[in-house]
Amino acid sequence: MNGVVMITRDELIAWATRNGWKLDRWGHLKKELDNGTHRLKLSRIAVRHELTTPWGWARIASGYYKNLTITADNQLAGMTR
Image (cartoon, rainbow, N blue to C red; front, side, top):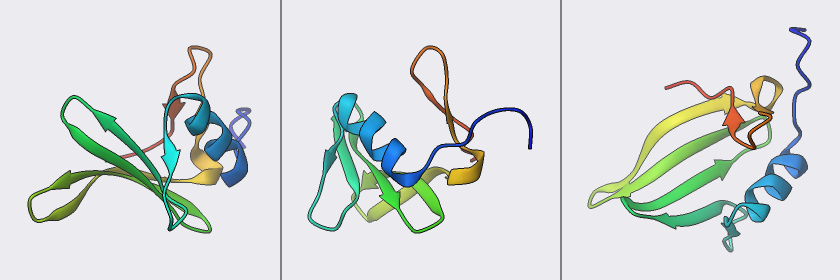
């Protein structure tokens, strides 16, 4: 391991809800931002950050929970494009 503590799915949900994200009826997190609706699509082992488009959801970044961390300035780190 790289010495950084990974987060769990429940820890990610807790962090996101503290930062204005809302759980939808499918168990994913959504937030309205200036450039549109963003979604954190949660699976058993990974999360995808997506943005809504006129054609559906577009993936912006993704990462496995084992690679995700919350930084000292309260940001989610570890996702790749």
